[in-house]
Image (cartoon, rainbow, N blue to C red; front, side, top):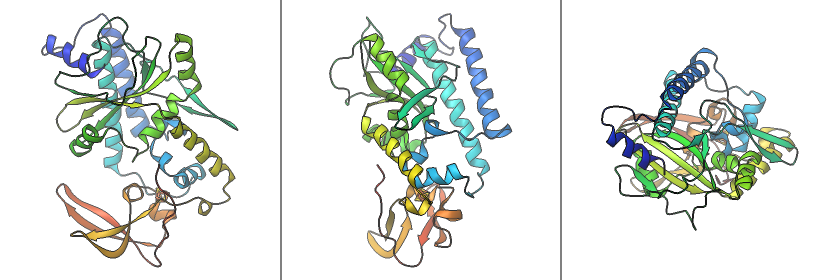
Length: 326
Ligand code: SF4
């Protein structure tokens, strides 16, 4: 749907960007997007809010810390660089899609959408949305990139709408994506389904006589440059979970009223060691040491193929498991 067209056009125009009369718009949009990313990440560090942040949707406690401005680990320089590279990859993939003739919208406008809640609405800014191309065959396989559309049920209709998300992933995560589809470890499915459920995308689909079918994740492997698109159908349960998390946060009197994510039993050569360690999401959480598990963690560094990574061992009484990530 997207990646196949990019590959087809690039193959037909070796060494140059495909020309379709939208070059000026593409170049201006690309420059504006890179400029905005640089500004946001390095010049005036801007925290995204509400639906535009994906990570916290896996942990309501983290959302409350964020909203209350709790002390957090300072952002590492490498993370800042990484976030900026994410903006550049997103803008590049979007530019290629437009030059390949994919009718995605919006381009450089920061168009907000709103997820309705009982007590108001959450604002977010999806990367783009599109309708299926009308009157031409949709190529879903047989090109150099990878398209995984097996989760699409039923026929595509002209009025249908897709939310489009552009992401970058390193080799390991890209491999897992191709095997299993997008997972919700970092809240990407929560965020994408929040956009799908938004009043604006639902209305666009209604007006066209279609439905919001789901999200096309266009992902670039940053190790190799390969691209893949993975379709994940719209699942309103994720949006309902966001709504109930927001309500729980509003009702909570302190972060301790909200559950922590699960700890994991540490294993060594397939055997449990009797220690508990933080799970993946908590290990990367800026609030883990400063507030959430304050005084309860010991940090050890363990070797991996790509260097060493911190392992957070939970000290004191074992923590009861309180919540499963969605
Ligand atoms: S450390 Fe884990 S449980 Fe605590 S706020 Fe962060 S993600 Fe949530």
